Length: 211
Ligand code: CO
Image (cartoon, rainbow, N blue to C red; front, side, top):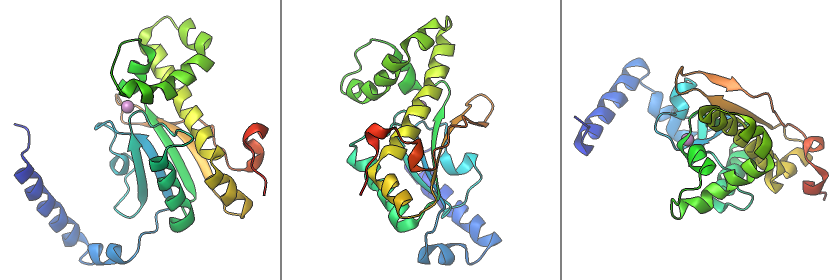
């Protein structure tokens, strides 16, 4: 039986009570201050619950999720999250986390008509175009999907770092590292793609902004 909305309220009450039973100040402490050190940019997929898979409590992780964890250059929603996280909350780490077997990535690899979402998936098709031979040299479809999941994360890490927001923060002496991770639905584990970007010199000259 799938839970009803009433069930969710019941579960919520039980959750709040269990938190209070361990720490009676749990919510009163949180209501006064939010100071997460991490911004998580991940996929909307219900199997990738950000806080849960990194064992973080409320207050520890600022989160933005969309289909296939994309950071378009001019997406007002995503940019607002990044600006708030960096300039107001003072996050020090921005983690773009993809996941293997991502449905959005799989859809982008095909040529089927999905309606409006194909315009969103075009951001991933850009990554396919730029890595066409590497991806289609892989004979197995699952391998192509999973490699594109990684390549998409790498592109989106770069897109975060290129924003005027992050470049400004670095110029103002803030320490911010943008990380690229991939989560395995099959084993529950995160992999670090080791594509950290943490300074202006790592930005391609075409995107560097100097003030
Ligand atoms: Co996904």
